Length: 289
Ligand code: AMP
Ligand code: FE
Ligand code: FE
Ligand code: ZN
Image (tube, rainbow, N blue to C red; front, side, top):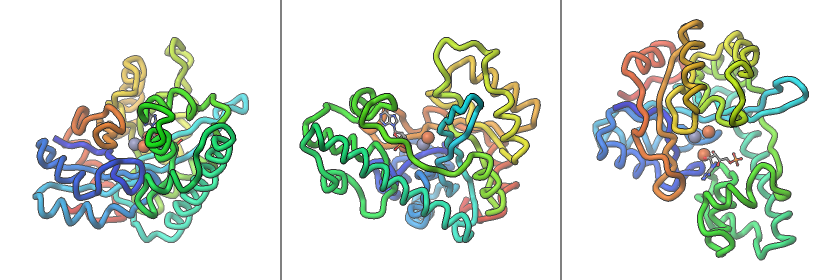
């Protein structure tokens, strides 16, 4: 079994990279990708653990990006970067910028929250590994620890929701530019959980074909078709799009740890042939398989 999208506590997952790899090996995964948000800091530990456990490891990053899709609408798009050179100077500096802006944004959200709840930045820091990529999950964990909401998920559907008055959006790279950067760094780009924010009930005819074709023209290599949050109609549409443009198709869990999210390791998996295409195309880093 091949699972190409998982998180450790170097971003918003709960397991250390070592625990993540151990759990993957224990549930029968033969090749795992670690794809923390906007950081490569878990790679070394995950690679060592994978060598001990005797499984393959594909180091990756889930890169936060933004796209303009007409009518001034900006959407958040996550791009998985597999096997880029983790020392590529432009990649290193762009990821650092994104992480810094995530801190600024999370601090703004905590400032807003502190007007109505007993919460401070120290409560967020208490929930994280030093240096981990900050996001709403760390704020959610603090809200749970303080007894303000019962679970991470409840925080996301209420006071941390995109429509909440406490929500602040973050700065991140333009999606097409991120795809170009991943290519220059020798990596392979796969759009994570496409279309999950697409309005429920919208018809297939409303799907943003032009947006996808522009990203494919910018060098997008693949789409994560099989992910629990991608609706069925979108999976059919993405499969047809991938066939038309000869894109890589993947399936993954997006596991964040037990209790963080419902996603379980290997609940969706990737075909061997698709993994081979990723490895053949990548030039930034040698996969320890
Ligand atoms: P952010 O990037 O800071 O806006 O936070 C988004 C992150 O929160 C995503 O990477 C998800 O892993 C996580 N997330 C989104 N929705 C939920 C949810 N309902 N429960 C737990 N985690 C979530
Ligand atoms: Fe996440
Ligand atoms: Fe994501
Ligand atoms: Zn993810």
